[in-house]
Image 1 (spheres, helix red, strand yellow):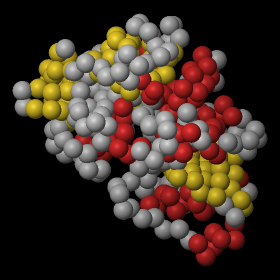
Image 2: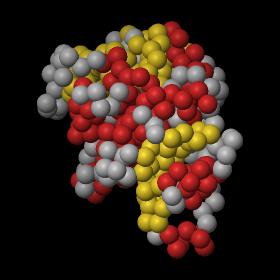
Image 3: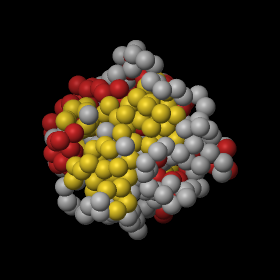
Amino acid sequence: MKTRAAVAIAPETDLEIREVDLDEPRADELRVKIVASGVCHTDAIIRDQWYPVPLPVVLGHEGAGIVEAVGSAVQGFSVGDKVVMGPAFCGACEQCLAGHPMYCVNFYDRNFGVQRPDGSKAFSDSQGAIGSHFFGQSSFAEYTNVVAHGAVKVPDNAPLEILGPLGCGIMTGSGAVLNVLKPTPGSSIAVFGTGSVGMSGMLAAKAAGATTIIMVDIVPERLEFAKELGATHIVNSKEVDPVEAIKEITGGGVDYALDTTGVPAVFAQMTKSLTIRGHGALVGAAKLGTEAPFDIGTLLLTGIKISMVIEGDAVPKEFIPRLISLHARGMFPFDKLIKKYKFEDINQAFVDSADGSTLKPVIVF
């Protein structure tokens, strides 16, 4: 069938909206009519070739839509089902079987290989094949074929226009907090970075019962917005030393900390802001080969733990419904992070995401 898709063609170059051919869904796939798709930092860094992903490719990995066709081997889905798409995974390796599919040993190939395991691609046009199956979905298209086991059914009354980011950015921040750090009621946490991932982590910490929530950034407007959403303290790290500020607020350091920036200096600050036996997590993506300072001489004495976290260490079919339930009860208002854009304005959404003027752009088809 014919469909429109936004195609990444070169680093730091606008996506091209083209009419392309979409092949038939395979036995293990769903064809989904995309209602909306979030724009994530990962889309931008792949467009710009931080990771060596073949171009051209249809990006997009925070899709939500309606099932149009069901592959012959797929069970549990019907035409008309509403779905949110999470990352792809093999479902058979030791990590998948242990309940950690975001650490699938085949994660890179399934999500960044931009083709099916057999080498085929779902999209093409007169210029040739176009990469597909980015994160199992390539949701910057009006219609796409997705890996069925990465799709999550949601209720018929679910607001698909806002749910796509639950499949990556918002899942990453909230999952790092709820699934990995697991703050206890009454505990303290510092979140470095007030983008959508950091704000999601903050909302999750609040839902978990943390009572000292410190947001760290250099943008005053975003810090004030964080306070409106529930941060108890804000620290402008352009004006003060954030480690000293956090230790002063908490009387020695935070129980938990989250770095959403991927900036080496910020990672070092995060490690130093923890109290004795504190637990920190990194979710911010950096270029391959990036190294960060880590004071093993001093930090050895603290007994801290640092986790590297992908996609919130979530099981999407279990975790996304939890987030939807929290949102429905007013305990996780992630919709306040979202600004909607028309498909034709997708490149403006990338610009606004990069300069921070929009926390979480969502393309509505």
